[in-house]
Amino acid sequence: MTKAKFIAYEKVRRSGLTNMYDINEVRLISAKYGPVLSQKDCFGIMLNYDKYRRKYLEDKSIWKKER
Image 1 (cartoon, helix red, strand yellow):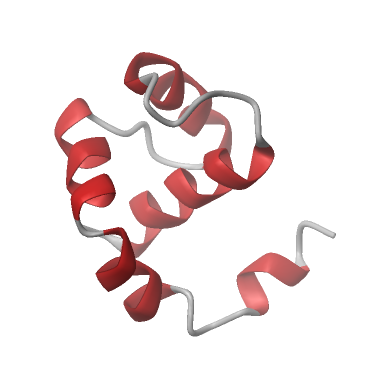
Image 2 (image 1 turned 60 degrees about the horizontal axis):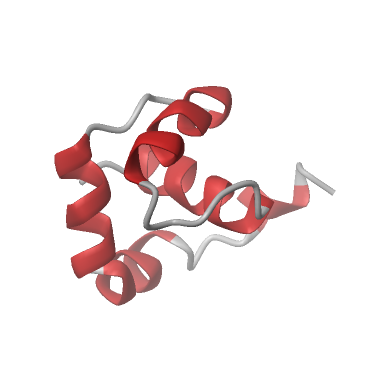
């Protein structure tokens, strides 16, 4: 899983625009925030969310740009 894909997923999650179990909607919205996620990407992130959160969200500077 790339950092860009995880960050796109996380931005969709934080946006609150959709239920994260609605994979098709997550995929559509992810295009707004970065690379379009595949169904496999979404399930991979869901299954390994804590691992990716620890790996990619240590750098908090990515969230400063949104505020």
